[in-house]
Amino acid sequence: MLPEIEKIDKELSLLEMRYSEVIASSQAKCSHPIEALRECKYEKCDYLSDMPPCRVCTICGLLAEGWSHLEGNYPKMQPYKDVPIISRGELFRYVRRT
Image (cartoon, rainbow, N blue to C red):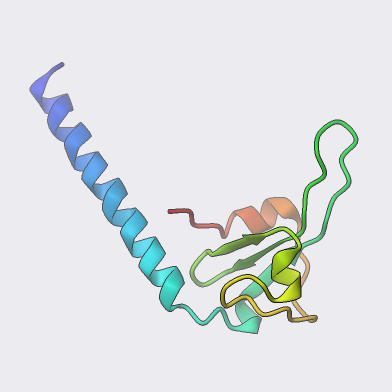
């Protein structure tokens, strides 16, 4: 492989690691205020498995999937009842994964 490509590959790898660290740290520190939460509802699917409800914090991008966040079992994601409902596609634009 060319030295220039190897150098850029290494830099990219380091940036990806740093990105994951910053996202994880930000999500751990975020209070996920109710005004920043968005949710999409459970969707029945006939040809694949059903899609569970999801909730995302629009500030830090933490995603809570499934029914446990609605029951208050997900870290820092309280089971608020008045969270705005948006489409699944729109919700996933906010998601930040580590």
